[in-house]
Image (cartoon, rainbow, N blue to C red; front, side, top):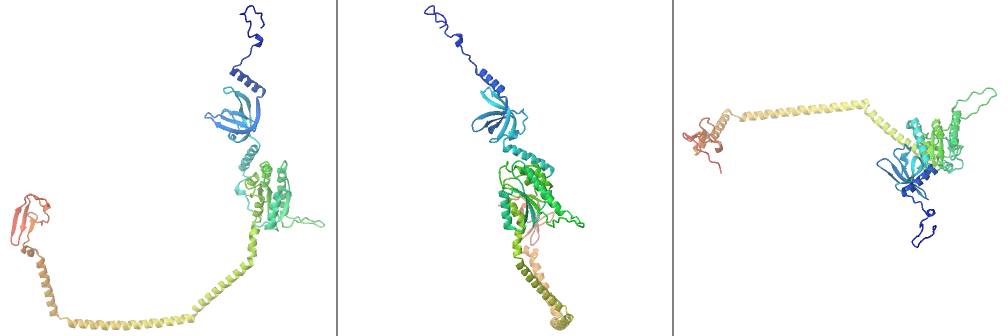
Length: 464
C-alpha cells in the first residue's frame, strides 16, 4: 500500500490512481472505431461476388460482397444516383466504390456504395452492349442491307490467322467439297492488342484488290505495258477464327472491324468462335456462320449440291430426250388421226350415210303413221256399229234411278222413319249435336217422322 497503516482497520488506498482503468461504453467504442475507419480508409474500390442481395420497400439495397477469404456487408441507398444499379444480382462479380464505415446499431463495418461496375467479363459485356446499340441505331445491322452470297463462288478472300485451327478447318472442308475454289489469304492476328486494326486492314486490302480488278484497264501506248488482272474477281470475303473466351474474341467486337465490314463492297461472311459465340462482326456481316467449318460448307454448298446434278446429267438428258420423242410420236399420231377425220372424202361419205339413215327413218315413220290411221279407223267403225241410241238412253235412265234410290236412302226422312229425331234451336233452326252447348231454358224444336214438338230445356246434367 502507498500510505502507512495507522491502525489495524486502516487499510489505506485500495485502488491507487495509477492502477485505475478506462472503461468505454459499447457506443463509445463503436463510435471511435467508426471514426478511425472513416479517417484511415475512407473511400475505396473493392471487388468481389454479390450474395444475399435483398431490396427493401424503401428502395435501399443490401447485399454481401465476398471472395474466397472473407465477406463484407454493403448498402446502396435509394438516394444514391448510381449507374448500373440493375447489374447487382446474386453471383455477379462487381467492382464497388464507396466509403468504409460502421453500422453502430449492429457493430459491423460496411461499405456505403456510390458506384457499381462489372468486373472482368462484365465490363466487356457492357462495352459490347453499348457498341451494339450504337451501331444498330446507325443501321449497320439492318436486314435490308444484307447482300445474298453467290451460289457458285470461284474466288474468295480469307481473313484469319495463318497458324490457327480455323484456317485448317476451312481448307479441309473446301478441299473435300470444292477443290477448284481459289482462296486469297490475308494473314492477320485475331487476338490481342492491335488485332482489330489488322483485321480491318485485311478487309480493306481485299476490297482494294477487288476495285483494281473491276476498274477499266487503261489503254497502252507505244512502248508501255499494263497489268491485266483478267476477269477473276472476289466473290466474297470470309473472316474467321476458332473459339475462345470473350476476351479472346474481343478483336471482332471492335468498332473499327464493324465499320470495315459495313464499308466492304464485297459480301462478307463472319464465322467467329463456336455456335454460342456472337460478335459485333456477326451482326454486321452479310451472313453469320456458327463455326469456320460451317462457313466453308455454306460457301461451297452450291457447287457441292451441283455435283450430283452434273453426275446424273447424261442420264437425265437421255430420259428427257426419250420423253420428248414419245410425246412427239403421240402428237404425230394424233395429228394423223385428225387429218384422216378431216379429209373431204370421209366427210362426204359420212354425209351420204347420214342421208341414207334419214331416208330410212322417214320411210319407217310414214309406214307407221299409215298403220296407225288404219287401226284407228277400224276401232271407230267397230265402236259406231256397237253403239245404239235406244240402248244408250235405257242405260242412262237406269243409272238415274239408281242415283235417286241412293239419295232417298241418305235423306233425313229415311232416318226419321227408323225412329230417329232431329233437335234444333227453335229460334235459329240450328241442329243441336252436343248437350254441353244447350243452355238452361233454351227453346227447342224436335222433328219426328210425323210432325214437330216444341220444348224448353231444364238444367243440363254434366256427362259422366
